[in-house]
Image (cartoon, rainbow, N blue to C red; front, side, top):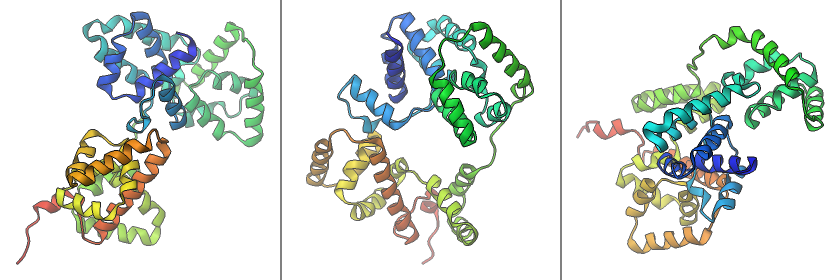
Length: 332
């Protein structure tokens, strides 16, 4: 495999469900498993356009049913362990050693914001050398954080950078690792944030949730919108009762379902189709097939439209996304 083919194979495996990815990885030769696993470990997040191009290049499969995931050593490790079972140890050691041996490999574990703080005032040539050894996603985050004129200087140097002496790379790497040693030795945990609020409100009683969000919306309506988007996602529709699904079906057009379900799990597709008449279900299946391959961004946009309809129906009291409410006692 060439470098480009290895990257494509890594993106394809990351896009598949874990079981399928592991089964596919298990069919490769040990050296191929190692090469692809190293690439998965090096990858950051992969954008939807690149993923879609890879899927279409490998097969005529529909990319709508796939999800964009991030790479990393842990992702590679899990796939190799699933694929190779007990014999995974040697391959994992080789993957780990290869990643650690890569120039600036230690930066895989460093938060982009912390790294930016340490290299912000470096010479553009030094920044260019460091950035050119980072995964694309991490490199883009670093470049985005630089002042505009510094961005241009760094990009110019990356574009014109030829071969660099291994001694120079090692010298820059040692200096950066030494300066960042205090950060590297600390363990950071993400706590709080909008996602934490969403998780808390998902399990709190409905009246308290409504009151909190109404009060907060007076101060920061954009924050409330962000919280509510995280509280209920498209796949959560599979947790709705059949009665609520049928209410939702009355408020969503067939073309919307056809697009949105292209990126849905088999469980959710079955739930939606199971609440339709046979004729309506057949028409929806035909419409989904007629659409053919669709852009991931279009699928996600339509899914969000349906989520917004769910939230509107819940606010109107026509459906409920709270399982606790199903256990509430009713007063005659």
